[in-house]
Length: 157
Image (cartoon, rainbow, N blue to C red; front, side, top):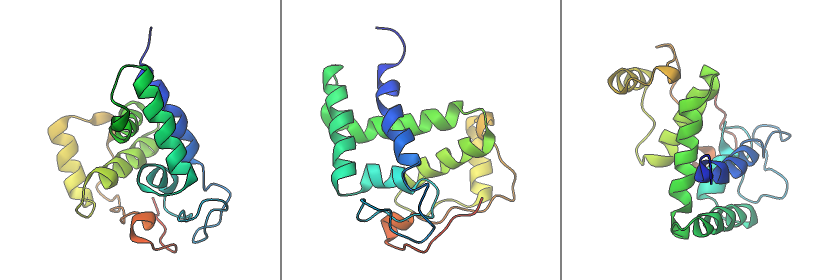
């Protein structure tokens, strides 16, 4: 086996979920996905990782089954998805795309509100994550509308 099999396993559902709400106007429910509202960048990934319904169940089964075939614990599907999200943030060549993935990773892994822009800059400096740097004027991300149940929330950046 060559390459990174877990990365390859999670890349498909992460990419698919990212564009799940692409053709739905902000503030509206995504057709066929009860509980998923369009508007916040990454809401499809949040839904895939934290949501309930046929699509999140399919993601869990797909990633969990793949992990099991690789000899890993199928119950680690969420950790694998989060690791894949962080990997995209760390390797993306477009800074805005990387930043959005990193902010989504933070929202999905922290129970407290997302940090402000100054905190992000300090964290980047301390961990030398130069591939993900942004300006000090970057606005903080609101909590996910999916997690809050607020379909009208949008994120500008």
